[in-house]
Image 1 (cartoon, one colour):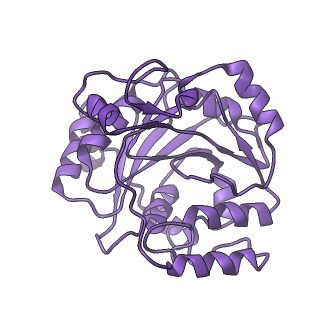
Image 2: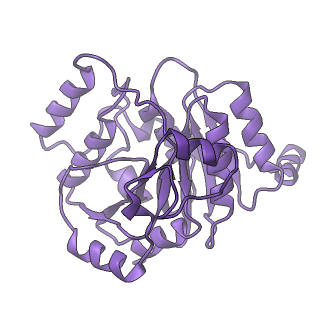
Length: 290
């Protein structure tokens, strides 16, 4: 395995927030180092989201693909697995559809990747005011001194400090594990069988993924001062009461399980035989003609 990836596939999740997805896709199209492809992992959005993706595809600089599942509640583990199975890069960047990537996001993650580990990125938080400024196109990005931000330190891109943070943070800590900004070798995701699709409803599927990676001997490396992305404010989707996902996570904590019980291997053969189409018009027409 090369010490750094040659091709980074971005898997970006979404559910019925097309305004945010439009900005997130535009941010990925402005990358200094373009990703190999972008795959939208859609957890059952409606026609407006589909229209946004097809509109973006008209002049998108890299292959843009849409992986959609039926809307049967919060099934982000399944949505991500299907999108990951459809990737063709050697490295997978997990990003949420309400996250606006800094222009150096892909380049920073590509530089941070190392065999034997996954990379946990950070997020800049907006408040309702900052979110509205971005959604209305007042600015493409918010900087350290702009109003409407929380966690301002995460707006600072300082590559030498980023390199120090990566060297100092190698661990198996589950603290602040969030798949809204993570980098994984695709081979590692295949080895641990991706997300556990038994996790339905909000939360804990990301902690389960990381924990099984630790059981497999992988380390977590935290990327600060690079790989920046800004989170658009929204109300959290936490569910009231104890979630069944907590019990599933407790099972993983109490075991040495590496592979998910219901995961990525359900989808690999399907997309190997029938790759998701590139939605850019010229490529779509060429695939139809073939």
